[in-house]
Image (tube, rainbow, N blue to C red):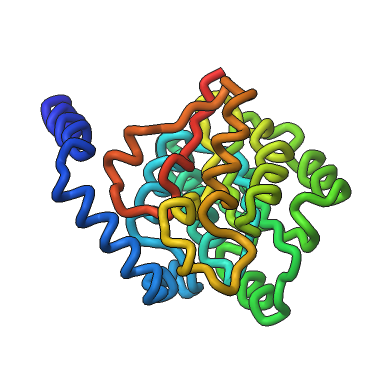
Length: 257
């Protein structure tokens, strides 16, 4: 495995220098966003509205960090919540196996996903609450940047030693920056704050005619602004190099201090 991991690292490092690969990935991103490609996938029965590459990336990060709590802004159909909950359940399962426990009470797990959305549709809430993994999930309805919502999330996060944050709601610069200010500090050292849809900055302006965001006003510009005064976070450029196809370029922020 050591040799294999070295080979992987070498391939990943070579990706940004491969002009054909980078150009092909950029072309695919433009075409696939126009065709709403990411709307075609589900995780354990719930639409996830993510690219398969980002789904795999999140799986890798969660398995590596082994968070006790994942905070997510933006719920939609709930697929991302179910993905996170399924990974937390697997962490509980493998932990029990490694501990040699003869019985397993997963519903007693302390691990949790907190999902925040300004409008949780009744049918989506019902489907998420009926899902077998619902006991790992808590949903909060309200603006993610409202003081009362932030206070509620911070109170719920108390006592969790390893925290991961995923920001994927309103994609304007101001909103994404406000979410970073509110929730990124909850990220534990060694964990990640993942800012989705930074790819908006790299797309033509005409791709977002009916949206308040676009080039110059999006989560990536918010990340750039936030990092100016928060050296405790760095962009994981290795993930960008590996994925190539992602809605979160420069959005995988690792907390290093």
